Image (cartoon, rainbow, N blue to C red; front, side):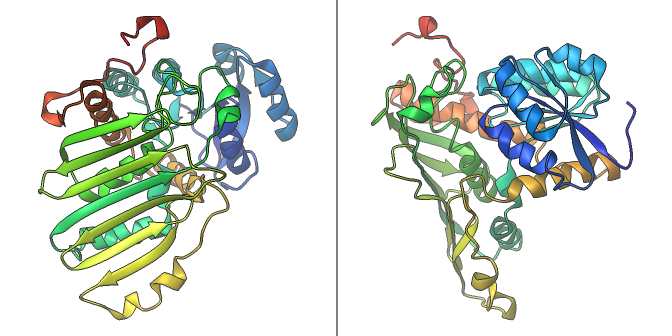
Length: 364
């Protein structure tokens, strides 16, 4: 594949809400090694608005865009239920791929995506931008240096506001076929972080409800996790916080220390306390206490810089398909537990009977 060593040429498939965030970074020239060269969306109005804003061509046909433009990397920013189809199309066009969370709604779809990218010799990058938040990086260093000793409890809390107006913006939102609920959509980044920090999950028991909006899926849920080392985890996720977003947080408790990262987007260090206190710990709360202005945080910029390094310098991806599928397997187990009312064990490869299914296929 032809690659301009000085500039990575990026195209977007999908021009909806999350694409605006990507466009601010790539189209806005924030990433020095990449530029936005084309856009595609089946909704011509959405594509045209973004095209006018960034003065680049737009398309309503993916193949036509690929045929007419010189593109190195395609960012898949379509509804979640379409990610698998679009990633496989892009891989067959021999383009490297960025796919937004969740990489897929089902484990089989995620596996197909990984296989297709491998067969076509293209890189697959799964967006997990919160892994690049500075407090998260410091926490990961503490985990790797065994500063917690025996881990006891890991907790994530997603307390965000998504009202009926949000879900009514697009027909796919809040559907089993294209979106999933708060676990699959809003909490997927946090579930990934908890899994990354605490290690392999043995089992999960979960409950959910649809509290304040009219959608097919859940807007509120809790899950209790048991990890391989015997430690426990809690996922608390809701989009029924009113009247505005409250937090997106992560806490790790161990025999030798406690760390809590809060803010809207796991980006504000709230507590950093260890028995083996070091000089490096003295100013860490002040240094990493910045709260981002919205739930997207600051990580997308660092993530795209990382992608440029991977494609131009040969750096190994932090979140490729093999890493991205881990949270898909865990989320699938969460839904399996909700649907059966029983504890789901990861070794059994539990699956959801609802995710990825059209309404008429559901056995309610």
